[in-house]
Length: 147
Image (cartoon, rainbow, N blue to C red; front, top):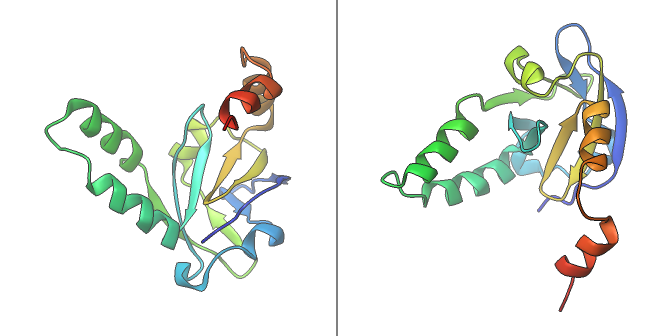
């Protein structure tokens, strides 16, 4: 089970490759075989799943009903650009151009660990996302962590 956390500022090279930070790589299980699935995330970020975590997500997606229009839409949008990427010798993954464009990523990225997956953001868009939240971190925490 992955336990990604923390944030890291990195750059994207001209071929769309991004380094996976060492502090995050240590949480990638051997079952992932250094393979990640990259896809569209929420709020214009990218989701990066180690293969074993992706397989767990995929099993839950398989439980969705193909006769339900919302389920079909979600599956199509999530899976249409999903792609596998193997870590190279310098611990980078290659991100397809279409996904970089979706996330508005050009040169710099913010990499955030979110337990079972990693999010990759354009740093300015992440800052804007934080500013546009209607509630404070404290009020959301109070609601979410309420027992």
